[in-house]
Image (cartoon, rainbow, N blue to C red; front, side):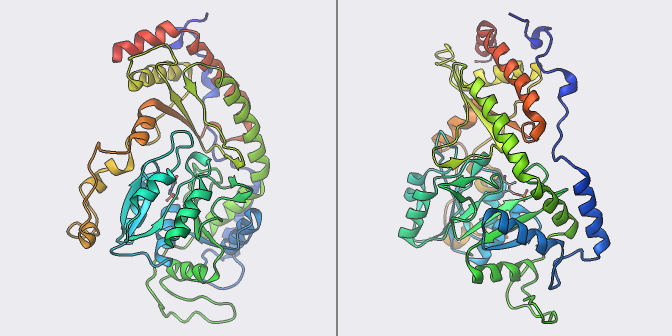
Length: 431
Ligand SMILES: *Cc1c(COP(=O)(O)O)cnc(C)c1O
């Protein structure tokens, strides 16, 4: 049994392996950006082909979406989808209690109140039963998130939404390429949004986002909202008339060109990632007290983030708090060179902005409906349990070349699990 690195042993993951390379920048990407720079078509505010329209067309074609509208980032994409669907003051929007903050902020940007629903303990995605419980006469949209790259339960969510006549906006920021019963996520609800932020599975060299929809009128509304409320049409000069409320949410041509080049390598990257991650998870699944993420039947999980849950009882540590086991494992694994991290330190409804109702002016939008704010520490038992007993791996496994690194990560897990007494002593000391 080799000595744990936290106590002076040699780390399972050598120092030279620890550099993260993501995104991978290759000559094709460099050339695409330079070509876009030289093309002098740097923004999408004109009619005709430009790097932004090329990305929209390729993204739609690759995944099978009817309409694609490129925007400045994934947060703007969510706001714009809500706006295009007419969601505003007095409306409630149901979102999961476990997500990136942007999912909760987007309704606020439209002066609508986010209403949080608990999650499923296996997929970490919004729980359809809890959606159902939280629907009121004011519910105007549901935003399921395909968290960590795993599709949400779209059959049930779409059925609930249809029964109540509520549109669904899929937050697919973490899940480009994921499928649910053969359909690409983002294309199942009324609208879908993606983020191209550098850490995502299909990145740009900075910030970017995409909206997709099967509804031509909705796509037109998104385009108007993206550009000051203007209508940009083929064969017609820009008239500088705002036909409705708009923003400047346009994507930059260089960002678009970079992502178009990345998209051309996506299939190759994705199949390597599937191979690497599946082999890694199969090894970890053997360890007692460790629950690895899984893809549900008839879905493709694209493994944006890997979340591991730890069960003290199954580890032989009855009575030890999950947080104590988690922090012991975090310390031991990090010392071995595995950068275990927490993704989301609290349920979204505990974030100060929602608890203190810090929106527009004096407590708007909550003041419109008289809706109470959320109470920190209350409700959302599954979200709380998952945050308390899990750790994540981010970014390291996204590169197609990560296979050898993941083998060393698995070695590190096995090494730590071969020292249950050390884990137990450390966990009990923090309890
Ligand atoms: C990254 C992310 C967003 C926001 O995307 P940005 O491009 O960073 O604005 C929204 N939702 C989820 C689930 C995300 O992971």
